Length: 539
Ligand SMILES: Cc1cc2nc3c(=O)[nH]c(=O)nc-3n(C[C@H](O)[C@H](O)[C@H](O)COP(=O)(O)OP(=O)(O)OC[C@H]3O[C@@H](n4cnc5c(N)ncnc54)[C@H](O)[C@@H]3O)c2cc1C
Ligand SMILES: *[C@@H]1O[C@H](CO)[C@@H](O)[C@H](O)[C@H]1NC(C)=O
Ligand SMILES: *[C@@H]1O[C@H](CO)[C@@H](O)[C@H](O)[C@H]1NC(C)=O
Ligand SMILES: *[C@@H]1O[C@H](CO)[C@@H](O)[C@H](O)[C@H]1NC(C)=O
Image (cartoon, rainbow, N blue to C red; front, side, top):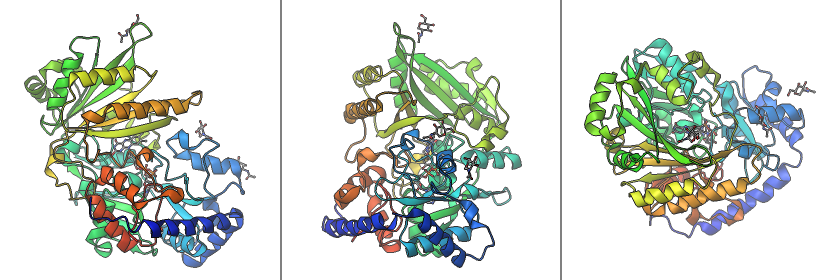
């Protein structure tokens, strides 16, 4: 990480200082600012549309404003009363609205945030802790064009993964798309950070399968891959959202899926003797089993006061029939004791429903995927991520379980790597977690609005993270940018330093961070697209 020097820090700080003093003045009367903005949009678009209807502000209608703000925001922690609110929300219905928004936002000096599906773990798409923004909410731009002949799909940023999968399955039962597991994710933000799902060991990330994109740049220009150039096209496929422009749509390669897949869930608790043995074996084999098998481990707390324990659910998806799966498992992972009765055969879209957590006994029709609701419901949460390179020894696991049992409810998910993830070079796209990674860990603590001490829940997850230090990647300790974690550092207030960005930058992107900074410096030197963890330009 020696390429970036500390010299630019001073100018970066004074630059931010300039911005902040400016914004406090600019947003004292946000209603008239919104009117100025709408006027400016009218002058810069030639689409006949009643723009006023696409604006939501507390001055116009406070309850509707909160409703709209709330609608796709996935982390209730960022919706509480004390959280800063945007000045207004704009829902463009046409590409030129987005282009004009950038021109007008610059002209009027209003900071902009962009939201597609609103799943950002730290809410940076709808909450700014630095300055008062307005939100461009892309939820009205959600067209999907599946082209089976061309083996590709164009999907607009505001569409969800669930809609994407559903539209593909409408046209073919043997095509799929290797994006995220939950159906409510916004395509716009999701793919900018990599986007892994149950096809990752076979086909890599969604970002690995992007063929083209439409991006509105800092000048309001609409660019495709050729027009933006290979540097920018590289940066947007994994360099995370909100740094390089606004993605309007992605063109993604479709991948083949078999007519019949097999899914299963086998749950073990630690009071069963074999618990640690099975988990140890999983750590040795999960990234080495055939690429057709994606076998995750979900840790939850089970039992009641007397017999509280950690339950481990081994949730598998296999691209093939159950007979073949049984062979793979009896050879590679007999300790789990998978039986034919555990195996459920289904097609790809049904497997999406299964992994999303919809009921398997009475599954709703796949049309629920169009409703874009997260099966998790409304939760307050804090999460963190890690990457493991080698098995965690039993002694380490025991301490981890002990720590988990301190809480009433906690979830941890281990996701196997290997397969295609090993074959793609680290610098192919900004997402760097490739060969040598055995599995990713996600720590997740959620709570409801009755929780009295959310700060204690956050404190606990930080302690668990500290406890895990010796067992996971180091120098840098890697993290998944789509599981944004502001504990790792942020472009915050005037304390921001470029050095700090290098720290979280290395965790998310390893050496690719340097190239991201270079590209940022070239395409957005004034840092127009910015948030708590956006890629900073070099000054
Ligand atoms: C319940 C849940 C399940 C998840 N499951 C998975 C999973 O299976 N696999 C996985 O890889 N990740 C998963 N994630 C993480 C998810 O990929 C990220 O949160 C991702 O950023 C979500 O994209 P979004 O558009 O919904 O979020 P948003 O909050 O709208 O955006 C996220 C970031 O991207 C920026 N952004 C949004 N739209 C655009 C755009 N059009 N152009 C440029 N920048 C933009 C935002 O400003 C923000 O910085 C999950 C998250 C949640 C909450
Ligand atoms: C404000 O929005 C709510 C919906 O949230 C609606 O019921 C109400 O009629 C609106 N009020 C006005 C004055 O438009
Ligand atoms: C957001 O909306 C949901 C209902 O959709 C509600 O349960 C929640 O309390 C709302 N949050 C806030 C902060 O208004
Ligand atoms: C704990 O005990 C209860 C009743 O004693 C039982 O129903 C439950 O299955 C047990 N849980 C575990 C995880 O053993």
